[in-house]
Image 1 (cartoon, helix red, strand yellow):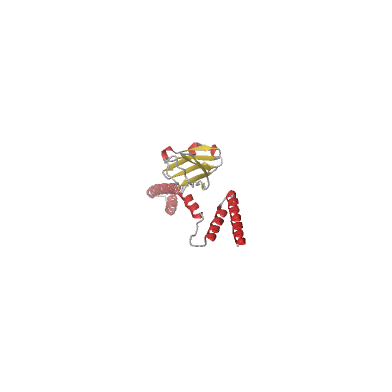
Image 2: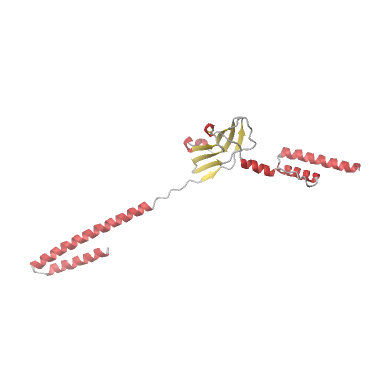
Length: 228
């Protein structure tokens, strides 16, 4: 812009001189200079406009519109059942039946699967298990969409085999909680400790059974001491 301003000042100066001179030869020289300066101004303005357009285009290419990412929610709980041929996983996803089937995908592997539900109420839902308890046949496994539920049908590789757990992690977690009998300590104390742990981890029926057993055991011990 500074160069253009200087050229315009030169133009004004030459035009002023043209108005003052009375000599034709000088007028012709000044007129030629005016045309030359006007051409330089036009060329400089075109270059400036092109540079501005290029900068604008580069900025538009650099600053891309930000596309908001859809949040993904992990499905952390599920129900399960099994038959001789299939391990069945029931993943609860509210209003899943309203979604197009193309938005529900499941990748099955020999020891795992990945369920992905896309764009449901502006969220994605995912259930991913890496280590199943047993092997499955991926090519024969499939899923069904039901009301508020995705039913995964995992075809067992070893048909007729009952899975005690769905995953290896579940097996490890359950086994770590199992009460252990300490052979080095007092047998009665170890037994009572084991029963107490079973009582804490058990359901209502288990608690009633253990409570009854402990009550009878105490009565038997009290009766034996009374006989002495």
